[in-house]
Image 1 (tube, one colour):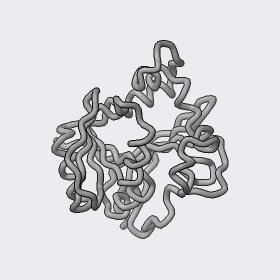
Image 2 (cartoon, one colour):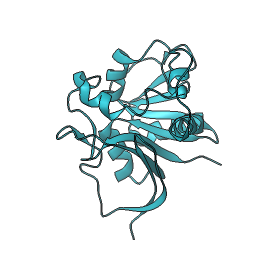
Image 3 (cartoon, helix red, strand yellow):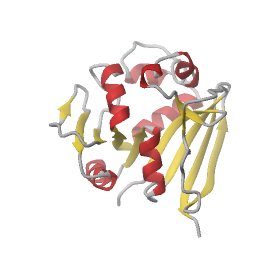
Image 4 (cartoon, one colour):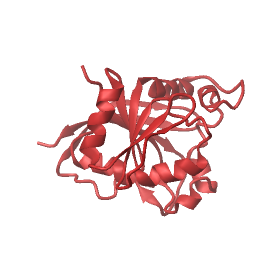
Length: 207
């Protein structure tokens, strides 16, 4: 049986998931948004930053998100930013399908990540990701516009938000442009740590 389609992102208290400019993705605000991740043991293991790191529920959630993911899909904007910022051993370790109008041969990285470039839309990218993922889940990795396309198309089953105690004031809003008439949410889980609040929702068609 095919797994779920989900996304999992960090979000500021005022609803932003990223700065507007790709050049600011490693800037102060973005680092504050993601600050809950950096001390974690699994984050350090996955990026090969050496031993050590914190354990606990935040670490478990990060590991569970990684382990449930059999393939990822993402937009060209996220890929372009990541191509500049990711280490040589990209952090996905599964097939990743990039929705783009650019034709390009698959790009294989050390550690099990291969980027495939899909030119015929989000549905085709998801079909290929489902096939690659097998019985594991497909993660819509980002960015915001791509996540929104999948939500508005009714293709997302579940999502998780790590709500960080940070205010952006401007940037890319996670749900800016959502078709609220088509989307109903069911709370699944809420967990808080000293750094962040994890919120998980199932997504259903609005009746």
